[in-house]
Image (tube, rainbow, N blue to C red):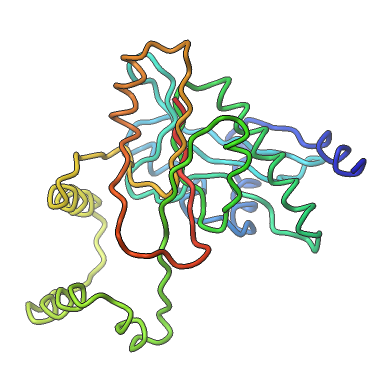
Length: 264
C-alpha cells in the first residue's frame, strides 16, 4: 500500500503548450486508447473549421506522460464549456500502455489519473462532455465524484471474413446494401467535409432527432450539476451540448462499453 501512495504523489497534471505537442502525439501513438482524434494534428483541423479553443491536460510521472486528454472548449451562455465536435467519436482520457504491472496496480494508477483530470475540469469549467475509448470500462472515479453515467455501446466488426460479417448484419441493412449496389453507388475519396456533415444532418432528420453539430451521440454520458450555476444557463447549455441520443434495441458486443462525459 505504501508503494501505491508514493506513486500517487509522483503524478502531476500539466497544461501542455504547443511545444509539447510532439511528445503528446508520440504518447497518443503508443497508448491503447490513442486514435487520430486525440492527436494535435486533428485538433488543428477542428480548430480551423469550427473556431473553438483546444487544450491538452497531461498527467506526468517523473516527466513522462502517463495519461491525459485532448479537448475542445468555448464560452456559451456565459459558461465555460468543454464539448465534443462532429466527426470526433472519441475525445476522452488516454493511458500509457501497461508495462507488465499487475492489474491492481494499473487500475489504481488509472483512477489516480482520472481524479487529477476530473478535479481540474471541475475547477476550470462549468460543463464538460467527452467520450472515452471502448476499452475504458471502470466508472468508479466518476461515480465516486458524483458524476452521472449513461452507457451506450460500440460495435466492432471483423473485415477478415466478409461472408461472416455479412451474415451478422440485419436483414434490413442487407437489403439497403443490395439496393445501393443495384443503384450503382460508388465509394470515392473527396476533400469536401460539407458532404459528410450534410449526410449527418439527413440522418438526424430521418431519426427525428434535433441537429446537434456539437457532437451529441454518446457512449456513456456524464452530467454533474453545480448549484452555483443559474438553472436556466445550465439547461440552455445542456440542451445545446448534452442532448442524449435514443438507446438502440440491439444487444452490445461484450465488453465494448464507452464513456461520454458532460459536466454542467
